[in-house]
Amino acid sequence: MTGRYAMEIDGLYKYYGKYKGVSDVSFKVKKGEIFGFLGANGSGKSTTIRCLLGLIHPGKGKIRLLDGRYPKLKDALQHIGYMPSESMFYPQMRVKETIAFAAKSYRKDCSAESSRLCRILDLPLDKKIAELSLGNRKKVGIVCALQHQPELLILDEPTSGLDPLMQERFWMLIKEACHAGASCFLSSHILEDIRTYCDRMAIIKDGDILKVGTLSDLIGSQPKKITFWKDGQLEFRSYAGSGGDLLAYLQDLQADDFLVEEPSLADLFRHYYQEEKNGFTDA
Image 1 (cartoon, one colour):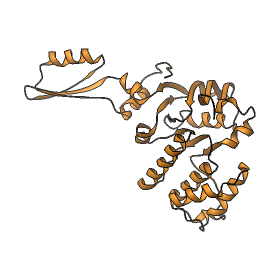
Image 2: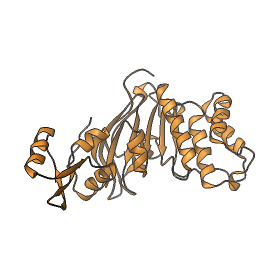
Image 3: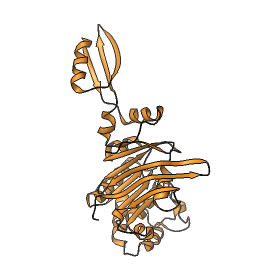
């Protein structure tokens, strides 16, 4: 894939009658990066993803996928791997039949890669879909999304239902794909996944993008938490300012001891969800 961006969204609007789905959503996903899409239920994540895939039509705005090399969406979709939050498969089909059936839509031989993915994820190939646990159904969705070795992965809550070992294997596969040049755009409620694996992220609330950037960009803009002990008393403060000013502030406290902590991703999420929209910044 040539070019810099796997995904570009500019001024995306979608209303359902008088109800807002998303409003003026804009961000870019770079080639080779893992981009997290963070928001509560009903925040606009699924609406954005459906617009990307052509499942619904936006009211206005521009979407450019894979550097615009495929003018028709149906051609671009041949190079995109999509995993919905809840995959719906034919319940009486066996796992291996379901994966082979999904592979036919990509007009290429996916058998070698699907076999490799099934081994890594330890999938019971001869079981019927109806007999699978939630975790195993998730693994079928992962194989269906990755088996054609797409240039862009669009994943909606991909690790919910997976046990810790399979979560590790899933992220190994995602990092492997991105290292080879693919890009990954994923929504998740699991803050630890976003913090650990995503290069950049966007926070969305009530259909509006609140912030886009790296974790350090987003956390660096928030007040630091200060815990200090003074005359045997434990006290807490928050501080927003430069490192040099912080040192002077700590000196003025004349504390017996202190601890300075960056806000966590959970703190950041709560901060943006407890305040009004702060404006859009692209990193």
